[in-house]
Image 1 (cartoon, rainbow, N blue to C red):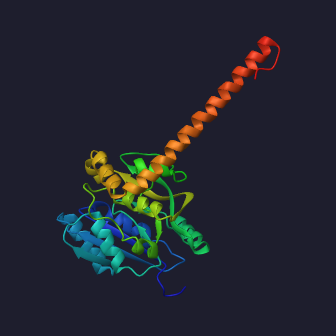
Image 2: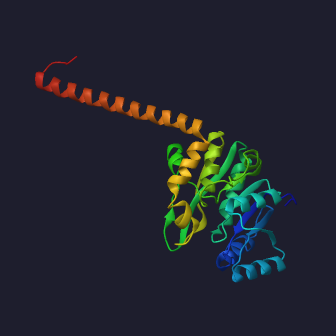
Image 3: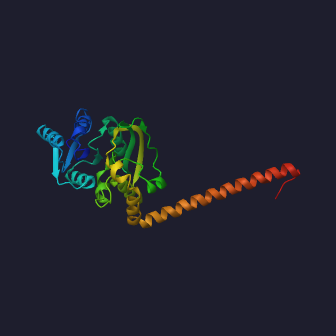
Length: 270
């Protein structure tokens, strides 16, 4: 094993001390075959339990960066700037990962330099159960709503080149959606690894339930305005697909009608 960091795991934390040690243990307690670093960014937590847990992690030699509360986008960018790994793996403080799957993702990216993102399925925990089957990236679906969670292996150079996470989203919780759109519009390649790579905790008071979910239309309007030319291009492509489908359906219906008339009249119909 070389000393060069292969994967930098970035965890922003705001008042999630209740779950943070689970996230840390899922990373630390595995014997990684590649060098990693785990950077936790304390995003101005005020919860006593969280502050205590962060202190324990520091005493154990963990990397904790302190900043004033600025939201997950800024916290992730702070962690990325401090990182040295070839790949970035964002892991939320209330989730846990399955390292073997992300080692697989690492080797996939190492074997193909054109891949910018490897994403996986997830297992729901907390207030929901079952498996989140993400599926192959659907570009038109991604324009309307986020499809891929932020817990994915990302090529650091591509992330830096595109400016990291957008810190200006109106409501928190959709910063990963903006990043994937930015990747898509810059022709970056996504790879779907059909394995459960992490445990996704569902909470009633999560950002997705309290901010980005209820304000989806506002965040989407922000993204459409930011990427107007791209949305316009994809809208035209979507319209062309609809027209092609309708033309195909019309052709099928006309052929069916001709076949019926041929049977009834006992002769071909032009």
